[in-house]
Image 1 (cartoon, rainbow, N blue to C red):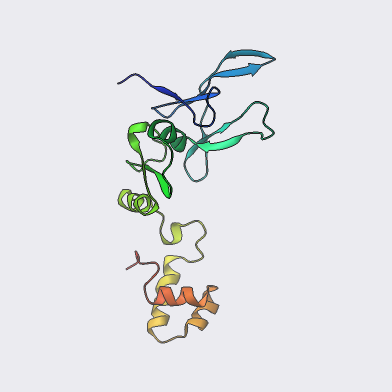
Image 2 (cartoon, rainbow, N blue to C red; image 1 turned 180 degrees about the vertical axis):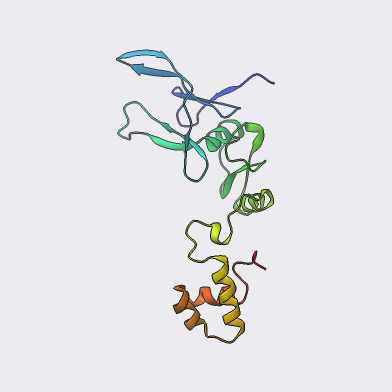
Length: 176
């Protein structure tokens, strides 16, 4: 295993450092008015599955800013985020924030990666989905049977365009 390399956190130079292994540390911390060598910050887990840390600037009126660890690593070791790009996890593991697992890519590339890795949520797995698989099957049966989209929409509490997209198999494509 190679030696861990540390770089300054972009925008927090002199306060925090990040390693190529995805660890973030404070350079100095004030405790009781005295400075002591910093510590590695414990990553916090966001509900979306990504790790983040809260970074503080002394003298700032902001209490702290939450930043995802993967973006901190990539900005520090890979340069500034290109316009319109996302931070992509090469292996699909949101918790693997080592430099060798991260790259800049377009939103389309990032979504395609998540589909390839099987980590992309579809249909009822999407947390805000109103419908279940059985409802979509029923909507398609009704649509194919000639029921009007406005009647389908009313019955399932969805919009008329959404009923049309489901009936025409433009949405919920993964459901055969």
